[in-house]
Length: 232
Image (cartoon, rainbow, N blue to C red; front, side, top):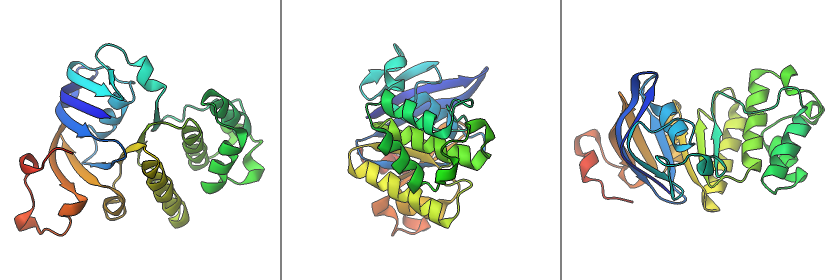
């Protein structure tokens, strides 16, 4: 699904990823954490085919990102800081567009909106007139409509109430159960750890630590070193 070897990605001239090695298997839910600027969002954008690979290798969904990124973009879903919505179209028109592009139905989009708490009275409002939180929910619904094989979520719980965060967790779990792989960034570590199969810590553009669900019963004194964790 995702295989990175000594992957380097630049933001300007700065190496936001400084040699990442990573293997992620089908249906895994992987949490990325670290301080601001550690490289988490860049890793998601690299896997989405939006950031070029400066050196090393990156294979996502069988596609070599060093050779072509366009094929990957059609098969992944990214919930990031950009919404990828058409602001002069209504919520309904945006969902219709993304549903048709993915071969889904209009009902798929409306169902996703309902689950994410977007009120029906907003369906015919132009995206330009929505709040930031509402736009994010619509963007998430549009991403779901595309039926991506790889979900890349940057702070998916941000700006949501308790019910909304529970809905996100349910959507992620359901996606993985149906074969999708999920990489997500979160600062809500208690909630995120309960959701994830693996937890990767990124610092200065490299993965410095990893725990897996089976490791959660260990204490700090007997935690498994990163190099000792077997491949998935």
